[in-house]
Amino acid sequence: MATTTTLKLPEALKKRIAQLAESAGKTAHAWMVEALETQASAMEKRRDFVESALLARAEVAETGRVYKSEDVHAWFLARASGRKVPKPRSYKR
Image (cartoon, rainbow, N blue to C red; front, side, top):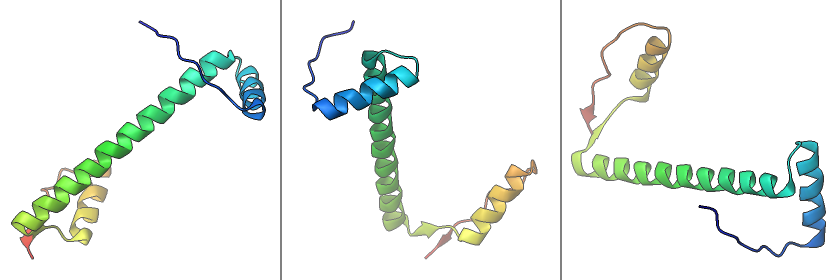
């Protein structure tokens, strides 16, 4: 269910949004909702990425297990070309 929120926009921004919305064939309301959804999704993805990176960093700190970048790159390239190859081996630093 949608709820109402009021935004106080500077006049110049309001005009820019109106022009952009019109050029996209949308109402200013629809354009702003889409912009907010896009921004919220981007921030959630960034948050999840940083969280994943911090967990990976903690795992490496705990286990000391890492991969050689050249082995990982070779594995990705082989997989991208459709070949089935074993995953690279990790090693303890």
